[in-house]
Length: 131
Image 1 (tube, rainbow, N blue to C red):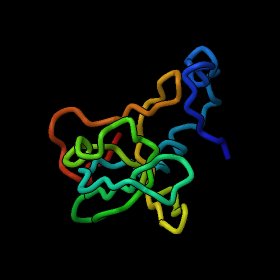
Image 2: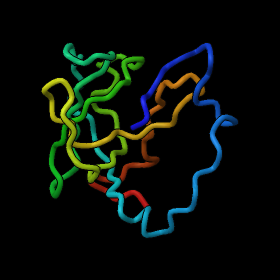
Image 3: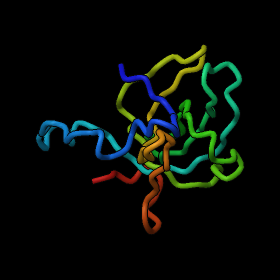
Image 4: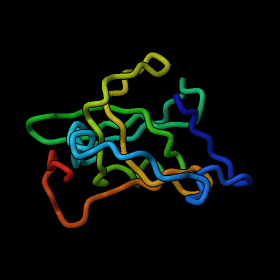
């Protein structure tokens, strides 16, 4: 597993440091369940080794509310509540310091490794599929 690092000195995620990945085909992409959701709460995750929030996100009537641990503490917690996000909801659950993380919130990596959250344009409903 790749260890995520935030390092403003070495800029580990500068685009020129990352070659293009091999093709995975449309089947690889379509295997992911990417959905739009609304953040209901963002609480500091005191037990996590690295600063993180425990997020609760509403992914609509079919999926419901899922929770995730996210290292996005450069955003004030109160600014996340009500924010629309994109999540990968079928990667399986992961236990982090006794907390069950059920999805991965998606973002673009800045060169220093900080995550800039992705959000949909317009007003697709919670649970909308990302194509």
